[in-house]
Amino acid sequence: MRPIRLPELPIGRRSAAEVFEAGIYGIIKRVVVIGNGFSGAENQCIGLVRALGLSGCHTLYRVTRPRGGINKWLHWLPVSLHKKLDYVMRQICIYSGVQVEAGWSKVVPFTIEKTGLSSVIEADAKQIAMMARDTFEKEGPLLVIASGRYTISVASSIKRCLIYKAICMFPLKLFNCFDFVDLGDFTIQHPRSRLNRFDLVITPQHDYYPLTPHGQRQIPWFLRRWITPRRPPDRHMVLTVGALHLADSAALRSAASVWHDELAPLARPLLVVNIGGPTSSCQYGADLAKQLIAMLQNVLWSCGSVRISFSRRTPEKVSKILLKEFSSNPKVYIWDGEGPNPHMGHLAWADAFVITADSVSMLSEASTTGKSVYVIGAERCTWKFADFQKSLWKRGAVRPFTGKEDISESWSYPPLNDTAEAASQVMKALADRGWTIDA
Image 1 (tube, rainbow, N blue to C red):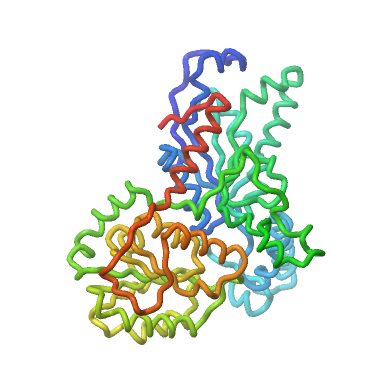
Image 2 (image 1 turned 60 degrees about the horizontal axis):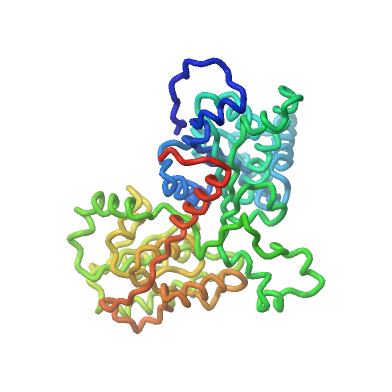
């Protein structure tokens, strides 16, 4: 998706002072989103872009790592070094006469994985900075929004590259020229260290769990200096309850229309079950699937319809157990991953949700609807994920799923509004710099 191209202005190149006196170049009309190839992170950026009123004005870049084989054990390396190491290993295999294409994963511990990202530009800080500088007179300031650990280095380097270019081109007017090609550099999710690299950092409250008294008690004293974050949030931190996402009111209205013919005729109440996948801080397997089956069997009498969806992280053994149990039940529909993803339609049409505790994104989205949200597996979560579950419970947004519920009964709570609230803080930060959004 390309940023809007404005017509060439019938003027020559202006000085920095003239540009800002004119005012037009204090209006942001375009955004660069830097993602990591994972929808959970990228949807947070795009959700924020939409909340800012800049939907359709963003360009998506990605920072990707080599995948497959032992690459999963090399994620501790800087992205650039990881890519160079992967390239060297591939070259060694090629020059040694090893077939790379056929049976690559069987011969060496690296694989070529087709990720479907060929249409997305690989993020390069220097190129993005050069684009921001060269197009400033026509399109004004550039807003950069990034999310995900892999994107931190690129996102924080863009401004540094921009300063370097200003020094080289205009050594006598560094301050003015830096302003002339300035950009807003925002990140979603906590970058762990050196927060001053960004103009604004948006992160969930539970990222600061290690600083709480309870969190400190869980960390041996000799490890505390290595646990991040190390300091309380400062003025350029925006704390949310959950994750940012795409499920705003406009998106839900659109989804309700798109999925009307399929979901509106279903018997009510409609219970939607969203199953994620285990994480290091929220582990489960077939045991949770069997527990969920028993609980769903107990509440089926109170449901008109049940729809079950799996995520990309759902273990195959978990999905197979649920498919075997419910595939022949007329009340239950299981989305098998074929055809359009009904997730947004489910958010719009469901009367209640049952969601596994591992997914911050799915719980955040469901809690935005104001509908009943039941959580299964929260007792298995540790560390900051347990803190997130506790924060939702305190707000009245979620309740533990026990299998004794009457799904036709509901409760009310103030819906989460993190994405809109974060957008308002971004607008405030931009206004402090004399910028506005061209929404």
